[in-house]
Length: 154
Image (cartoon, rainbow, N blue to C red; front, top):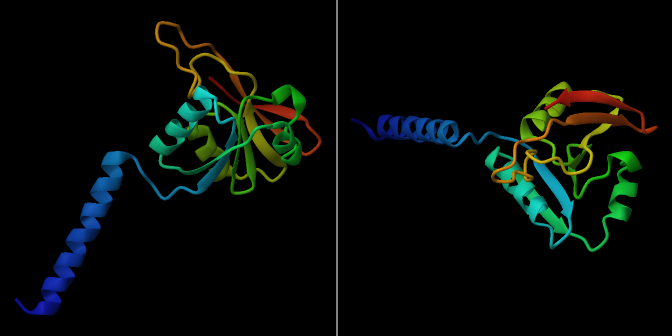
C-alpha cells in the first residue's frame, strides 16, 4: 500500500474515532457560555458541571456582587436567581436546563434577551437534592422591556 493511501485511511480512522468519541460523550460543537457566579455558591458550581456535561465550554467568573451583572444584562428583578450566564448574545439566568439553552440557540428569537428560571427550584440542574422530589417550575423568556413569556414548563 502506498503512503498516500495509508495517510488517507489513517485520516479516515481518526475522523471516525472523533465522531464515535463525541457521540459516546454527548459532546458537540456548542458555543462557550460565560457564567457569572458567587465564589462560594455550591449550586452555581453544580450548574456549571451540568453545562459542561452537556457539551458547553464554560468560562466561570466569580464575582463578589452579582447585582451589577444582572443590571448590565437587563435581568428583570422578578427573574433573578443566583447566577447569570451569557451565550451568543443571550442571557441565561438561574438553573436553566442545557437542552433549553440549545433550544434558545436553535430558535434564536429576535425579541428575546434571555431565558430564566427564577429562584432556585429543587430538581432544576444544580439544585438536585437527594431524597427530595423535583419541583415543577417554569422557564421564562424575557425581552428588553422586561416582559416575560413561558418558554417551557418542567
